[in-house]
Image 1: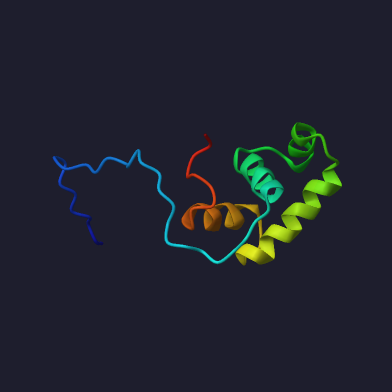
Image 2: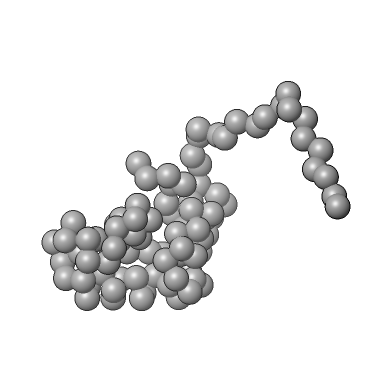
Length: 93
């Protein structure tokens, strides 16, 4: 069995500065970013639609456009790729 050496005296603090990563050659529309931001905050597609005053089908449409652009298979992957490449902040603002 392996053990993990952890120096109890040195804990790294998470950075409070959010800076986009290196340039990512993907263009998301303003609405796609809005939809992805709401989804990343835990909104269902229907809740996001209500918040944006559009139909659920419109939110589905935007997400279906976002996935291939980010090479993601689902909302979690899309959010992680968007954060990694600076398209969204790591935490909701």
